[in-house]
Image (tube, rainbow, N blue to C red; front, side):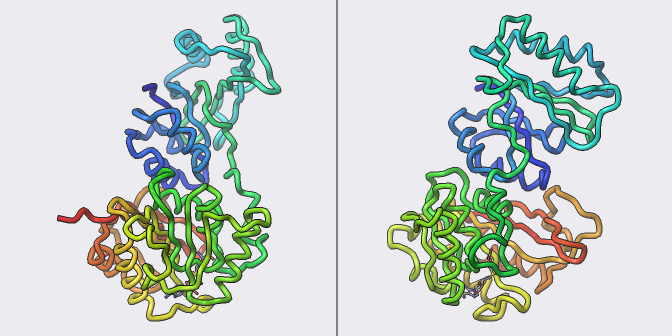
Length: 382
Ligand SMILES: C[S@@+](CC[C@H](N)C(=O)[O-])C[C@H]1O[C@@H](n2cnc3c(N)ncnc32)[C@H](O)[C@@H]1O
């Protein structure tokens, strides 16, 4: 299987890495010099195509992508290496070169000159150039923060923005300040549930339905649950709206209690739920049905009872900003100041309910608020 270079979108490379690992569970991932480039070995094309269609943080793959440091290389040497790359990776059909930059320009490296020279190499090797709709695109990416250039045949369309970005939460028929951004909601669904076909997705406290919308649009059987009928009606209206006016057969929103999930799920889902996405209530705008710590514990217990043995969850909690913001995964020993309760208590509760924390990342919301995105899996049972 050919090694690929995964190129991540810029909004949160750390979370995008975790999402990619969840969508390609059999592959080995290794960070390249840029935090947005990941070496992927052991993945099949079918899995990568699915990851490209589902992921929130993945931009494209480059086949055996070449990476050079612009500090240790010259444009001429890079072009020589690309000449050899093109010999070893021939393609059939028409071609084009597409170049883009991440961050600042690299002094002495002109992307437009290099694109022209690469186009010349392709032409000389007998390829027909088609800038409108090529069969193959050679991507050329410069990364300012790591002073590096990546190049290779592209899989995926390389769009820099989340392809469903036009579906902003504020445009839905039912909006509340608690509504999560679709980009984060999609990432959380993928992180919790992994590739398609593993089983249904459940959002036990659905609010305005952001997770169910993303789970259902990605083709996953899904169910949102909320204790308040106003939320249930609103989230169902949002779901229908997201499916262009037709209620999807594979997703619903129902009234129910996150602490008694089995009562709100179809019988054949019990023991088979692949992923839970949890955004429990906080603040004045969305009151829970019981004290926050009890609600979380009872919900995690109930989720564990109906989860597939390899199931996972993603929990989103508001926190005070870290002193130094990072997109890297946090250490579980690190002191994290939750808006409600203690971080160590949350970890204890998670483990007590039969889950094993996998990773924790922070996303900045504004100057005085961040979010913790915690991923956990079912702990193996003896
Ligand atoms: C923070 S909001 C969820 C926001 C959601 N992620 C969104 O994008 O709109 C939490 C939701 O949990 C619901 N809730 C509180 N206690 C519940 C319970 N015991 N069972 C089900 N839902 C509950 C509240 O009604 C509220 O809508």
